[in-house]
Length: 453
Image (cartoon, rainbow, N blue to C red; front, side):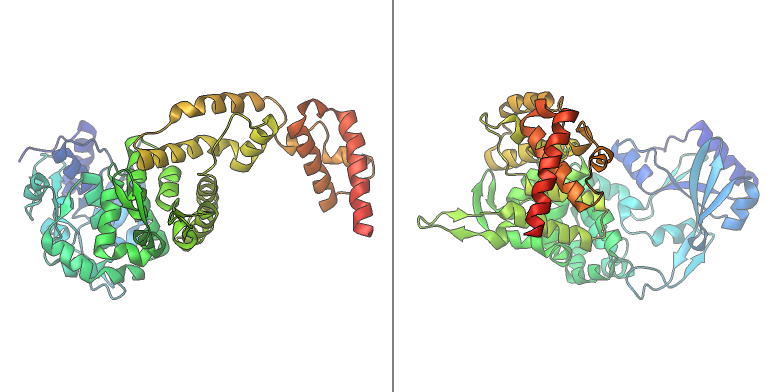
């Protein structure tokens, strides 16, 4: 096996350990990716020096995870995460080891890892690669195989069930027979893992080059039904699309289209969930044709529930919901400028390109190609109308101006400003301070009279 190319700076870093009587290795993904010809400079280091000993060697050390043997060393304007060789006790909760013990043996440390292709170690002085579990052979065969007994690895940390799927998606590999069999038997253990860790693994899978491979494998093992039952239910809805016989397959093709074009997480996540509303909205008309009226609204509602359940950020929840709710919007040339301005405000200026990307990938999955040429005129009109007032902040009057003419700072003032904006969206030339103040007085009078009635 070829040697790992250790840089001069890493060798210098390693020499500090060696002079103190310790060893240092690069472990895991960086070595695996080097053997596969994939660029990866995100190094994880392990050593036989315990955290306190590392702190004696270097002046600047941050105890980032000292309980589990991990510290971050600041060395020549770089930060290196270094973990002491360790073994782990039983995982009574299928999430965290009950006990972590530091050891002096690299072999013991590598034995606790999840898959053979993640258990390489490269000596930081010589570049020699240690492969105790025939991981190199598995790399050449394109196999993800658990170290030792698969059921034991999955019982120790149930997140490894999803990691298996993610690495298959990332590397375009398949799991070996025993690893897949044990993952299927233990799929329900994923429910013991925190929502945050589940979503972190899900998003990493979505951001691979072959996300459908990972998602389909989660479904095959039963993992997907535990974490996203709303998605597996899409198997029940048959549809004739390009290379897809049901909604679930259509979804996978659309997500892969997003990956092929390098689109971001928001778009990939929206595509993963964009048609889940079809399960609850399916109907069959008098001609025997399936219809899914309002599935985009239902999908937005369900996606919000799902992403809240997975403890996602408010930004991601709101963005994905907007993309799903509007993925069926179709522009026609008879849209007024006011309609386009309202579209921009409803979607959000920052979300428009992502919405188009969702629609293009949906078209690829439905018809085999994206009809990008149909968007040229729409994009030009969007650019043009944004030169005029688009939001309340763009109006030629402010809340203080309204307050000066007797409109109190209250919900009523907000209603007045919103009605002024609606007028200006249709008639931009009316965005004049004098005109708006007169109109505001009329609107306010109407609102107060209706409230008295």
